[in-house]
Image (cartoon, rainbow, N blue to C red; front, side, top):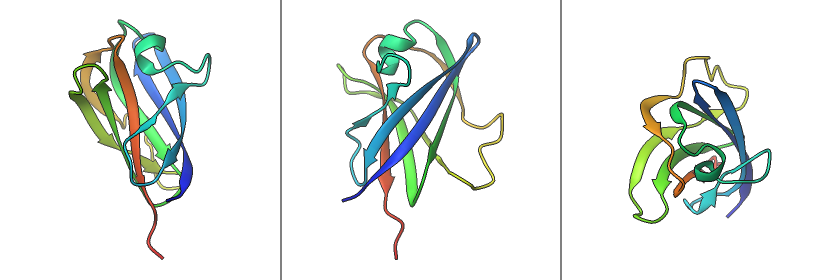
Length: 115
């Protein structure tokens, strides 16, 4: 198992909020917290309508999910962009709009690049 830094930005009509996580490869138990106040997305963007989530990572591969931490239901999913690759373009990371609830968490899953 190894760790790598992952950054995410969740965009709404009022702008974006940045999140960070040190993601342990091979597990979805990596919850991103905001760069201001270290709050999970459910607290930092409660009741905001989010329509983009962009995630970048440093090596291997990365998937993300937006999940309700009480019901355990996965609400949105996507893939990250490798730092230094061609992305992310400005309009990338589009998701069906979702109103952020207080119980929601943004989690990442990374894998090591094979040698």
